Amino acid sequence: MKKQKVTTQKPKLTYRVNEQIRVPEVRIIFPDGTQQVMKTIDAKRVAEERNQDLIEVQPNAVPPVCKFDNLGKLLYKMDKRDKDLKKKQKTTTLKELRFHPNTDKHDFDFKSAHLEEFLRKGNRVRATIVFLGRSIIYKDKGLELAERLTERLSVVSTRDGEPKFEGKKLFVYFEPDKKKIDAYDRIRAKTNQPPLAPLAPLSEADLIEETEE
Image 1 (cartoon, rainbow, N blue to C red):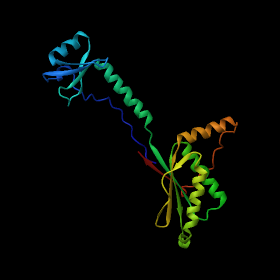
Image 2: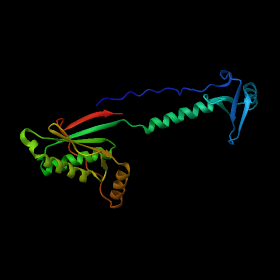
Image 3: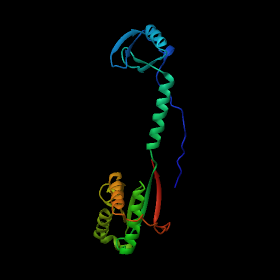
Image 4: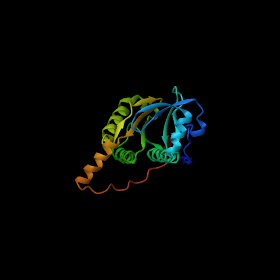
């Protein structure tokens, strides 16, 4: 699995401020929502009297729209907003497990439990049903297995589209559903069910990981 590089940058101010604003007049938006068109030189003077900065917020308007604000505080707010956005952004890992149309119950339960665990951790998953040799003639068994998987994983996910054949493989995608996962965890807590036991590790042949944005 590839690691994503994280770089931290200071927010870039794309607005013109103070002496950078060289148009003859500007429209000032005041905190109470009122507006006033002023000569730029007068607006700069008012900003100085208020111990604030004249900041252009809509450069393409005629005249450009500005406001009085503290540049340092504005930069701080932008930095905080960017950090909050980064916290919300997650790198999604696509986890894939392989099945066969004649997968037995034990193997089905074992792999389904792993898919459920991946989904509960917020990962997107793909179940790949592989048809070996002449088993491709049993497409109905593959579709039946896909429906069994959909039902099994419905408590923590939503199926992304219909199962799709590509050559001798049938692909089924599932997206984690946070509301379902939260409800699932609440039900387990209310019924005093013990924490989920760690699952036995998967073989490398069964598990494939891909990093997605």
